[in-house]
Length: 220
Image (cartoon, rainbow, N blue to C red):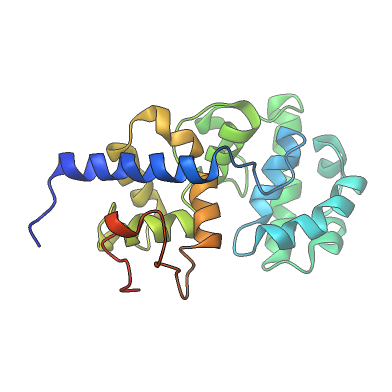
């Protein structure tokens, strides 16, 4: 096959977004996001585990620690009691407490809403910050690349194979291809597609809305 030009790849990437938007429309965040603080903690907890598992533990967690002040006053061991079913729960419990303490001590009890400030919070990386900004504040500064988005981006050959294990580089590849007005819906629509159709094992290529523009169709 001839090498795809940059313009052709841009057009294909935009078409991917158009089709997934047509199929799914607006997709709600899969995690508790009744407040920016709860959203931040929920996304922090979702690393290396599923949203469904996080949603099982957060009701009791937030019942006992509903605010940054309440969680900042807790010990990591107290928080760990509510999240012990999650992977890496001890380090996550420590990050929850440290994150809440910084929110209280440096940001007046309010979750900050800039990328620079959010990524200073313990346990918060760029992916988490992107979700908090987008869902919590309606601010779009990038694309949150989780395992689903990363997998789809590489199956669609929108990011080179050398970036497959580097989500931050995958994000930059997508940002260069997609116009800014399309960045917002990508994370949740692509997660939905990754769960429903383009699964890690046994993707359902037959009848997929992207079948004819996906280089990996029927090859995974």
